[in-house]
Image (cartoon, one colour):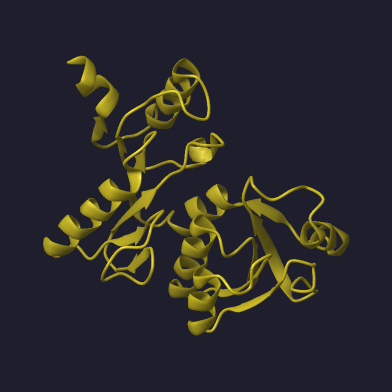
Length: 212
């Protein structure tokens, strides 16, 4: 099934595109900027990137993936709906992709990319060969992705649109919490929901900062 990512040149969407590709999925995408470094990198991997005019969506497309940044009036979304193609949020797509792994989800207001890269490196050096999806490029990785075959995955999970509750990680890290996209109180409620069902270890920088 071909998965088409709208806004594929964005850092989160481009990382998802590489992760899907390395897990054996057929991937295409569209973007408003076809000359960006991320788009050129994806094309070098064999991913076809179309203009953001709906032309990349056709009856061979099995799923369209979007982020919160994509407007509901986007032509690609309209075309997907006309074909009856499901439209999936990026967070749900990434969660489903990593559902067969023991996921370590890294959330927090800031520092997520650094901690995700560090965890991926540590697990790799321990011989655990993790599959990692970051929110920033990492030296030695394929952009923001490390496509390991081990039982663990590490992923940076974005809090800006509260979509982190789409994930059900085995273990979790919250780096910190502060007023950014929402008030600190509102953000803490979302982080609390994120870790509420985590069965494994939890490192909560909010509690550590308070000495709890």
